[in-house]
Image (cartoon, rainbow, N blue to C red; front, side, top):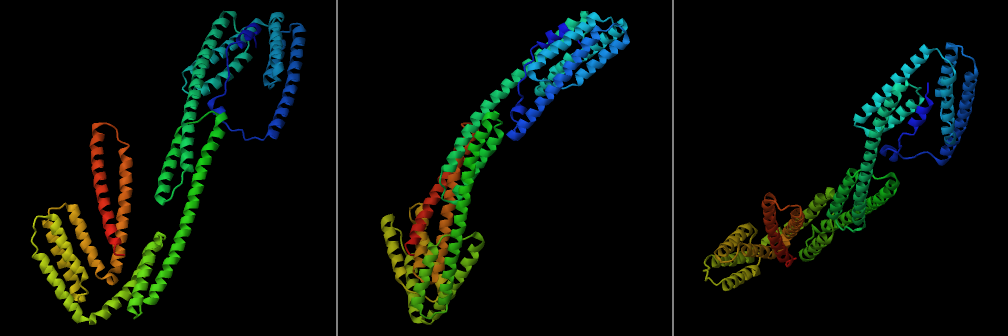
Length: 522
C-alpha cells in the first residue's frame, strides 16, 4: 500500500544517475536498424502499459465509490496493487502524472473507505518492516567496496521504496530520513568515484597520446640491418606493453586513439616484413652466386696450368669476399665446399713444386741466416733506429722464396720467436708490440699467398667478426650508462662499465689496424 504525501516527498530526493565506467566502456555492436526496431517495439509496449494502468486507476476510483464491505473491499484493493506492480514501464512523458494519480487515489482509498482496523494495522506493520529492510540494505551498501554495484543496487531499492505503502505517522519521517541519509552517502561516494575515474581517464589519455607519438617515430624511421630492426622491435613491444598498462580512456576517445596507435604499429611490422622478405631474397641470390663460384673453382681444382688456375681461384676468392651473407643454415656448408675446392688445387700445386728442392734449400739457408741475425741483434735503446733495422731484416725475409714444405712451419715459428724476442726488449707499448707481431704474421702470409689464401680469408673473416661483436658490445655499454642514477652503488657499477667500455674501444681500434694491415696483401 502507498502513502501519497510521503511518496511525493520521497520521490524528490536526490538520486542522480550517471553511467558507470563499465557502461561507458561498453561497445555498441547492434545495428542502427535493429536499434530502431527495438525502440519502436518498446514504445508500443509502454503505450499498452499506460492503458492498463489507466484502467486500474479507474477500477480504484470505482472501488472508492463502493460501500464498505470489510475484508472483501481490501482484498480487491490488494489485487489492484498487485496488478499495478506487475505492469511494466509507461512512456516517460506520462510517468510522473500517472504515478501521482495512482497514489492520490490510493490515499483517497485510505481516507474514504473504512477498512477493518486490524487489517490496516497489519498492512502498516508490513510496510514498516519492508521499509526498515530497505534502510538496512541501503546502510550496508554504504560500507560495500564496489561503489558502482552499490549505486546500481540503490536505484532498485528506491524503486521498491516507492511501491511500498504507508507506515504509521510516528515512524514515517524518521524512517525516510534514515533512508535518505544512506542514499546521500552512497551518492557522494559514487560521484567521488566518478571524478576519480574521469581523472584516471585523463591520465591514461596523456600517457597513450605520448605512446602514439613514440610509436609513430619508430614506424617512420628507416632501418638498414637486422640488429637495427630487432632493437626497434624491442622498443615498440615495450611501448605496446606500456599501452596495455596505461589503463582505459573515455569511450568517446578510445576508438580514434587506438586506430592512431594501431596504424603506427601495423606500418612498422609491415615494413619489417618487407625488409625480411627482401633479406631472404638477397640471401637466396648470394647463395646462388656462391654456388656458381664453387662450381668454377671445382672445375679448376684439377688443372695443371698453375699460374692461370691460381689467378682464377684467387679472383674467385676475391669475389667470394665481396658477396654478402647467406642464410645461416647454408653458410657453413657452402663455405666448406668452396674451401675444399681451393685447398685441393693449392695442395696439388704445393706437391708439384716440392721437386724444386735446390732453390728451396738455398732459401732455407738464407732464412736460417736471417733468423740468426735476428737472434744476434743487439738493442741500442734508440727505438726508431732499432725498429727500422728490424723492419729491414724482415723485408729481406719476405723477399726470400719458398723453403721445403717440411721445414716451412718450424722455420716460420723460429722466425716469429726471434722477432718477438726482439720486440719484447724494445721500449714500446704492448699495443705496438702486438701490431708489429701481427705485421710479421701477415708478411708470413704474403710470402706464400697461394698456399695461404685460405688462411688470409679466414683471418680476415675472424677479424671482421670480432670487430662487429665489439661494435655491438660498445653500443650496449653506451646505452647502459644512461640508465644509472647518481647513487654510490650505481657509481661503482658505472665505473666498471666505463672501464669495460674503454677497454673495448681500445681493442676495437687495435683490430681495425690489424684488418688494415691484412687488407694490404689482398
